[in-house]
Image 1 (spheres, helix red, strand yellow):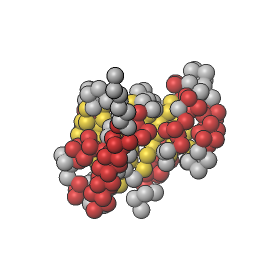
Image 2 (image 1 turned 60 degrees about the vertical axis):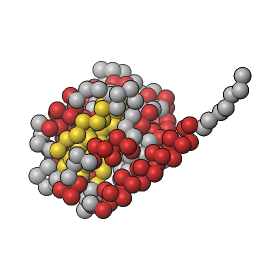
Image 3 (image 1 turned 30 degrees about the horizontal axis):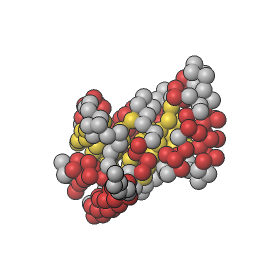
Length: 217
C-alpha cells in the first residue's frame, strides 16, 4: 500500500493566519477595536460581554459576533441589548476561524462600529491556534470548572492578553480556590493581567470595563 503523509495542519493554519491578517487590516482601516472572548461553556463569557455592552453602549458603537456550534441563544441575549449581533454557527467545529469572522463582518457596518466583541465557541482548547484578526485575546475561566482547570489547559493562558477568573463569589460552594487559579495563570504567563470577577461584585465588573476602555483612550 502506498501512503502519503500530508501536513494538512500547516496549510490550514497558514490560510487561517493570512485571513486573520486581512481581517485585522480591515478592522484597523475602520478603527474598530476587536476582542476575542474565549472560555468554556458556563464560564460567564456572555454575561461579561453583556455587562460591557450595558456600561459602554451609550458612549461607543458596539457589535457582537456570537460564535456557537448551532444555537443562537447568546446572540439573542446581545440583540436584546440593542447592539448589532451576528450569530456565527460553526456546525461541527469547536472554534471560530478567520474565515467565519470575515463572513460575519460582512454583515456588520464596520464604519459605524467602535468595539467588536467576538464570543468564541465554548471550550479552552480549540480556539487557541486560530487567530481571528482581533486586537486582544481574553480567556475566561470560572471557579465552577475546578481550580485545577488552568494547569490542565496551559496553552490558552500562555497565548491570551487577559485572563479572567469568574464567579469567585461561589468559590467556597464549589470548593475552589480563586487565588490558586490566579497564581497558576501567572506561573504560566507572568506578564498577563488577571482579573477576579463576579457579576455580584460591581467593583470587579468595573475593573473589566476599565480594562476595555484602556484600549479606547
